[in-house]
Length: 103
DNA sequence: ACGGTGACGCTCA
DNA sequence: TTGAGCGCCACCG
Image: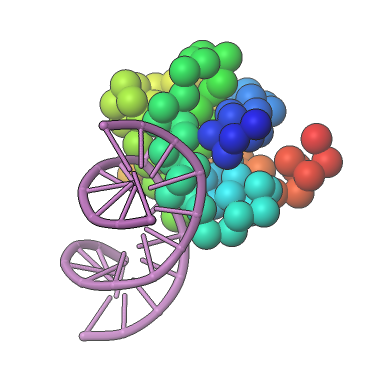
């Protein structure tokens, strides 16, 4: 199982209404500085929508990218109950690396 | 093997 | 506080 597949596995575990960051996923995989590679993996995610990659945002709480466009990503998140103001998500909705360790 | 690419993150001005 | 600059890392030709 390669790095990309591990990323997709973790992303699958993010509950509806919650989000995480590229950085937290990198931490959970034990490769602290690979947040950029995590973004790459999600960009190429072939399992949409089974892998909810729209629930992954940047560590500064801004939206980050999305293959179908940032606006679409925002729509999906708000539809799931994550409020966004000034293109920033609510920090309280972010689950951290420990969540993945225990799951 | 090697260099280019990108849905990132941190630092410093 | 905001943005440019630079480092990072897996993947692919």
